[in-house]
Length: 262
Image (cartoon, rainbow, N blue to C red; front, side, top):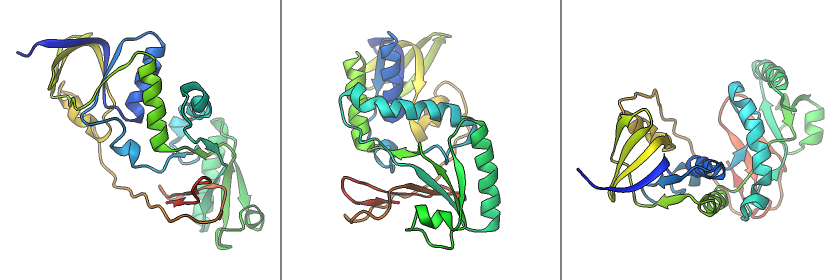
């Protein structure tokens, strides 16, 4: 049996945006936290996303948390001392067909009931506020609170905030096993040796299923393959965060570089 080489109240598995954010918030509340990262912070999906901070494209059940998260993002640059390039841009969620419009109207009613500031805009008003759109777009829902941030800068900010709050981060430390000794007593295996902790927080993204199986828990995880495409620099084309009622499409243009992220 390997030697116990470290202890913490909470071991966080994964140093992406979710893991570092959780570690930072726990440390602010006085919890001793150790983050175990298999490579280096932010190299997985946290570095391969488009940085959309939208309300309209989130599951309805998540809206209360997303509303709170948007307020936190607005404060991160000042709070963490690193510019995360947060921008409140306003967002349009588009509909082309009559079926799309009906789905959009139902979604807006449900989101408004959940506290989202959003409204339906029909043609020809839609073309007036968004002249870059094709006139065949029948309607859109507008939310002034949709925004964006820079994913890479956000990882730097969260890492700085976590470490500055006392969080320890072990790089090149993949979790190789978890032994539950009791309800609040765990041994976590790493290449350095064992870590003893009172709780394990799995923030390993697509690998959370692997982590869960280490303690005989089966999570119903599936994988959806998405793409992020970026253009060359361009002059300003459109100001909004653009999404579509049918799926996961997001389109936005960086004000600092002019690149369009799709």
